[in-house]
Length: 163
Length: 163
DNA sequence: ACACTGACTTAGGCAAGTAATAGTCAGCTA
DNA sequence: TAGCTGACTATTACTTGCCTAAGTCAGTGT
Image 1: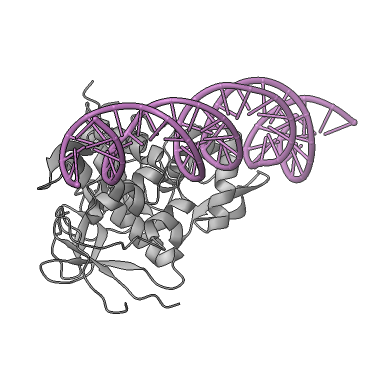
Image 2 (image 1 turned 180 degrees about the vertical axis):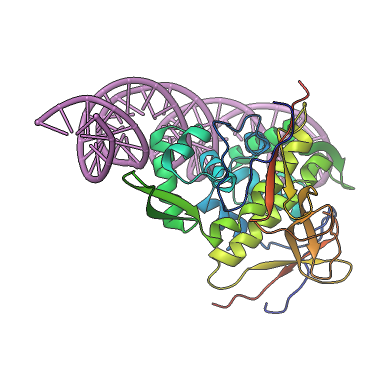
């Protein structure tokens, strides 16, 4: 079947026969980052951490986990490891977000705002503001036409695969 | 310290002393959903699954995992379990997304579009379209002023806690 | 030359996620 | 009333995530 046909998202259930999600991007993404430690490492990268001890201390992870996770994230392409040197100091390594890593930010922001809303009795501990205008930043679903899109206003469309 | 002060996000690192993220909403959110199975169960819920066998079959999870995860998601408040009955059939249970569960959708969409972009050699298998206008749906970072916000244009602000 | 420090690695162990297989149980249907 | 079916539960086993504690190693400062 190579035509695109809506299988329907929305709260309402649509008939979809025995179609089963394959090559799902969500699952592929989770193969890369599926551990708590990977998410907090990335959080700290967005928060500005670059050195090994910054990651392990601020993310409150043990050294072995920090080392393993950093290695994995570098090998997956979300971080790059590069030597650097502060004056009067020896050469060190630091880890910086790649474009691939930076583009995962909406996931973290969406998780944060969901946690803020549903899991924080005492209100959120931090907030995100647009540097330019100071307004709060949120993750939103929008269509290319510019409309804000709610959970029940989405059609799921099957696409033909290249290979 | 009760004044709100920027600790700076953005690619650039800002001095932040020994501040360590506590009560982090991302971590709290991950306590609720941190397994692959929870994510795929939620995916299938968005895709329209409601019955036990729909979840286990479409998400390709074993029965025990499906049962455990559904129980957890119900107890966390993302799904509700309710009896229903089709004519001529016995009473069954079905699982439906609550508002809390539905609001996690931006996280899944953000994960999907990241996977689409970075992990799909042959292009994405499905696409999301706005029901009303047919345009592709994406998860975006925006401020309350309506500006689209990039990863490097965010200030992180510490907030005083209620308790 | 020697200690110090940052950045790891190794070893040992507990807990949790997942699968496969088999069994249970409550209605319906015949 | 006996069988069927959907929705589970129980058991066993494997694998992975994470921790603590200890060890390694290279480059600097003294």
